[in-house]
Length: 80
Image (cartoon, rainbow, N blue to C red):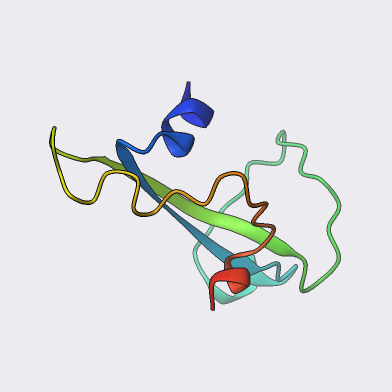
C-alpha cells in the first residue's frame, strides 16, 4: 500500500504541491473528462500535483534520514 511505503524508512517520498487555479484548463492543454467529479476547491487551495518514491539500497546510510514521523506535515511549505 502506498501509505505504508511513504512512511517506511526504506523509501524516500517526494510530493509536489501547488495552488488550485480554477482557470488552469484555459492556460494549458489539460483536459478533465466531463464525467469526472472533482471536489469543489477555492482558488489557491493546496493540491497535490505529483508524487514519487524511491527505494533505498539495503544498508544505505540514508535509511531513516528523511522520516518525519510522528510529525504531521500539512503542507510542502512546512519544510521551507
